[in-house]
Image 1 (cartoon, rainbow over the protein chains, first blue to last red):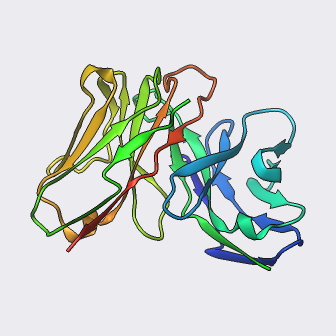
Image 2: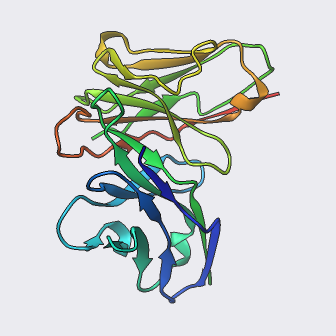
Length: 117
Length: 118
């Protein structure tokens, strides 16, 4: 089964500094990887995805992610953090569903990002 | 374009009571998902519909959870009877399609229903 791991429960960074939120994956076949963000009392919002092509993927709100096949990682990055980036971030991988052939997402446990002024 | 709507936003019940959640997906989206998000964990898929048919309910506790999507649009998720461990946020999501097509269709999430079981 496909899975992702987020090794950090929380990441703290000062506003204006670069940020990285880590994600590693375990898949059979080619990975389809995603990042979602969740603000308090809100649903998940799509940030970006890697399907194929360039290893550096650009997404919403200035975020980008780097796909690294040799390290099986898909870390989320942003050159300059904002206080408003403080939220819960989830990495996810597409699973075709054993026996169903239908797509579903398998999520990591989430990383809380706190950006201090 | 209207997003995914869910109600209620919050619900508090006692254990052994029943509860129902409602979801209205984005118009035209064939695939609908219900996820359970327990505090400190990532969302876990409970059930997936393609139109009005169930395509994956492998992680749905069928002895107490049920879901339906009549007419292939709105959906309801029911818990009966509720247990303490059912306390979680229940998220509904929809996508254009979720079948074997190799193009991934983005899932759009509703705001969720926060359930507290006392």
